[in-house]
Image (cartoon, protein in one colour):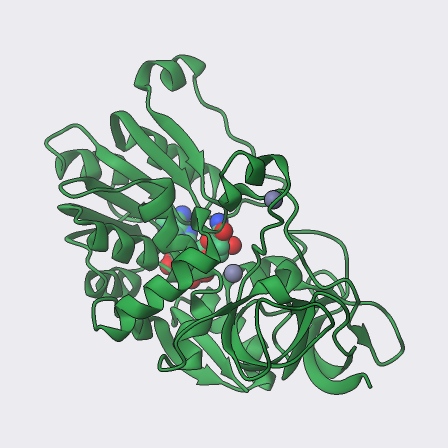
Length: 361
Ligand SMILES: NC(=O)c1ccc[n+]([C@@H]2O[C@H](COP(=O)([O-])OP(=O)(O)OC[C@H]3O[C@@H](n4cnc5c(N)ncnc54)[C@H](O)[C@@H]3O)[C@@H](O)[C@H]2O)c1
Ligand SMILES: [Zn+2]
Ligand SMILES: [Zn+2]
């Protein structure tokens, strides 16, 4: 029997989100029905609402979630009812050209639920990042459920499902930050602070946080930033060079994703250094750089999709480090809210008042 539950939906570009009834089918082959316990509000949800990602309205928003598997469909072996899981948007296929090359974190054919959740009138919903978790129950592919130690709080665990994993992985996996490195992170929101934490975990010696908001910069220090730069008042390229012996940082992570921040990242890195773009640009954005500088500065210009993570490898490990007291993931949870509070949470995010608002269900 399909279940009717409340869910938060973006019906049209730029319109406020709506709390409405949605219908969630029983799990079919390869699917799992999950009781959502917590779901973070990520900037990507706001991108969906504002039309920055696509035009497949209505969207069921929410994708940084943890919960308990309630029911599984036929043939599901990955998880079973009662398992505490983090939802992921990289259920790898094991067969595409990336998987075949042994690089499943690039999987080009990730699994999502086959059946559609719908509005009460039957209109199919597009779940954000193939998840859709601003609802008390959601339907996903079983491979989207990563079982982790239930000793971690659901609000903290859920954040590993997107932004915090993306930031940690931008430093650890994509940027390959290692001990002694100098790292600069532009944009100290949830994703940027996670990149700072990742750089710190990897043993980076100099970690420079750049933001336009002093409150964000003071929080960045709690995650391991050794220096901060307000790029509204100080040229960030000169400041980063000044803090790295005049050379620039080994790895610069752009956790904003705008042409001006990318340009700063490009010029603030040392020769042969690495730029990691983890912030997501919108379709209208363009970049103009002298091609000679691209050649002459060498190094690597990389993008970080989901922190190049492999959920089955990374989520249990990061939860384990957190439970040992070595990774303060709980510091990302600024507040817990109800489903009705999401529009206000977007406003707080835009005003820079929170790192993560987390919906508790
Ligand atoms: N690559 C991925 O897989 C992935 C995953 C999750 C989120 N994201 C993206 O990462 C980005 C950041 O997400 P978030 O949730 O941390 O957002 P956020 O709103 O919490 O943080 C953004 C931060 O950037 C700062 N900022 C804005 N403009 C700036 C500028 N010009 N210079 C310096 N700092 C500036 C803001 O003050 C804020 O602190 C978004 O684009 C989001 O869509 C990417
Ligand atoms: Zn694949
Ligand atoms: Zn996200």
